[in-house]
Amino acid sequence: MTESTQPAEPRQEAGVEPATAAAERVPEAAADGGGPVGRPAGLDRAVVQRTTIKALVASQILGGVGMASGIAVGALLAEQLSGSETLAGFGTTTQVLGGALIAIPVARLMAARGRRPGLVLGYALALVGAAVVVTSAVAGSFPLMLVGMFLFGGGTTANGQARYAAADLAAPEHRGRDLSIVVWSTTIGSVLGPNLVGPGQALADVVGIPGLAGAFLFSLAGFVLALLVVGRLLRPDPLLTARALERAARAVAARHADGSGSADSARRAGGADSARRVGGAGSARRVGGAGSARRHPDSADADHDGSMRRALATIRSNALALEAVLVIALGHLVMVSVMVMTPLHMAHGDAALEVIGFVISVHILGMYAFSPIVGMAVDRWGSRRVAMLGGAVLAVAAFLASRSDTGWSGLLLGALFLLGVGWSCTLVSGSTLLTNAVTTGERPAVQGLSDVLMGLAGAGGGAVAGVVVGGPGYAWLAGGAAVVGIVIIGIALAAMLRHAAGERGPA
Image 1 (cartoon, helix red, strand yellow):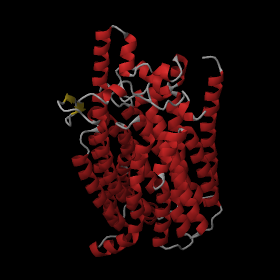
Image 2 (cartoon, helix red, strand yellow):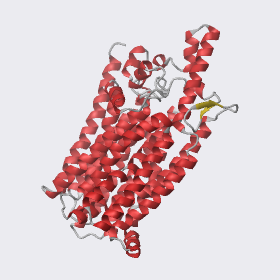
Image 3 (tube, one colour):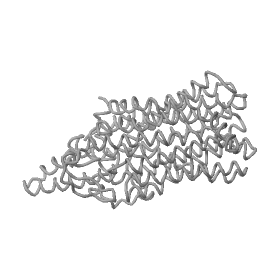
Image 4 (spheres, one colour):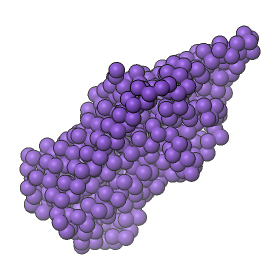
């Protein structure tokens, strides 16, 4: 039996999105001002989803340029301003930490007003952060750089939350695919960004600022354009639209029940009979999302305030959501800890900036380019199998990195590429699993908390990475990351074994 038929990860998401079938037929959408309004013309959910994907793809390309341009030189600029190899990792670590903590206000804003205002906030903070970093380079201030990198992390928040916006209106059987398309679109900007290091130095000479700060000028341009795309093209808001459709579908189900006098008919119209379709009430209890939907029958409404306290309570009571969060966070920990120190590992072997930028661009290519394939694999074979694959690829990549020589080497290039592929597997599988596990109303808070924990894991990994490279060395850092990859395999495998045991047990 494939995972797609297992009750622990229902394919049609019946318990997660009640009334989906009815919602497709309801002529109602979300107003840009923040609330749902009825529209006389029927809303075509598929058309709105295509429009949403196009806007998110465009913003991801531009935001990817902004983020990757700065990340490529973040550790080098930090080492230059601090004068310490040990502190070099704190530049990127602060950026990752900023991305994590900025997810908190972004989640609350999304819960109250939708995806678009939250994405705008993230890109706006990143824009300010890039400007502060340029200023810190001119002033020669390492503390000011850390402030700028913290705000710069808003771009990470926006780019990360965009993948969830792609899933709000997606058909359940294509959720992994749609989410992964938005992840994939970051490839273009993110591969281009590191290769702007050389041109950035030339631009810096023209405007009279330190060479490494030139890359952040491209970041400024990328974030400005991403802001314009999100603000003008992401309409109607996908999250508010999904909520409106679910409210309307519940109203249709209620009218149907009143007219027929049959509760069973109402359940069929609204999609509430999820436990029957995925194996009965016992299965519904095992499915985190279904259980959550039963606990909060009105969870699609805007009374979910996006608080982290509420999100934590949801994750603690939802085994499926907890599993997803662990896969995402640990995969990010492995990727960030190795990636952030690779430029220094190469620079210590006298590798040129252009070569370092090329290696990082190939790494980012691995992160994003194959995500549609990963998404289709998730839809076909299930999130857990893809998570296990991701853990295995991360472990192999980190082990190869631990065996690479200082400076440039083909082995290091291959290791960084695989590191990106493994991260893509854990991100897409974990994000799809998390979206499946919670209701529409719970999504902003739970997804925001997931990105907070993911960012904190990356920030912790980056901070420890600098200390390890400054002490035992890069090989020890990569070897430890390989062990974490094996842990990811264990988490997904243990969940599959628990599910198999539950299937063999009494209903």
